[in-house]
Image 1 (tube, rainbow, N blue to C red):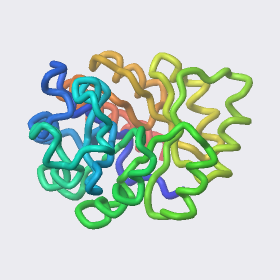
Image 2 (tube, rainbow, N blue to C red):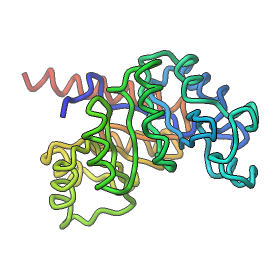
Image 3 (cartoon, rainbow, N blue to C red):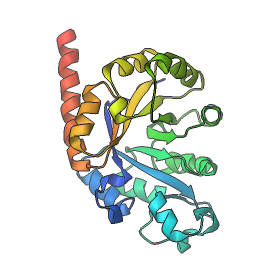
Image 4 (cartoon, rainbow, N blue to C red):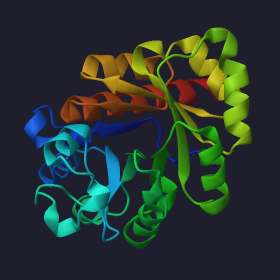
Length: 241
């Protein structure tokens, strides 16, 4: 695994909009990038006419029809496409996508290759066999395995299976990102991400415990703590030389 040049990464969850009505809108992604976020996160779906769109379950419930049965022009105008986000935030943005619609993967990767940097595209999915298939098909993207819990006794076994499948990062619920777990995940050659951080305080704690990335609702606060943690790690590295 090639380590990303800048760690840790802060991902603005659903664009980092703390008001639900603004989540996953193009305005939210634009604002988080304007605040200095270098990473964004979303669920992804594929329209009937083959467009990768960024959408979350709340919007899906209101539509009352699956996105796969709708054309892009039948979706609310505030639902952005993946290409829209790249155009607004630039090609050098880290994009983490929860692949709730795994059938969208080829379209997602093609969009990243056309508009962004596929080495900064993080595809999250819970089936290791599918991730292994994606590694063979798409060697230029990043793969992430999500989980809520990870028993200390099973960390090495789980991480070894992920490493063998070509997975880049383990995404763990942020309170469970402890220094000991971070050390074990890193020893297996994987990155550790923490998901579910609502506040900058939670994001800071997750990073201080050794996580390489964090998913946070507070974009402005996240940007500040990521910058502080990068400086802290640089000082540690400088002191160790």
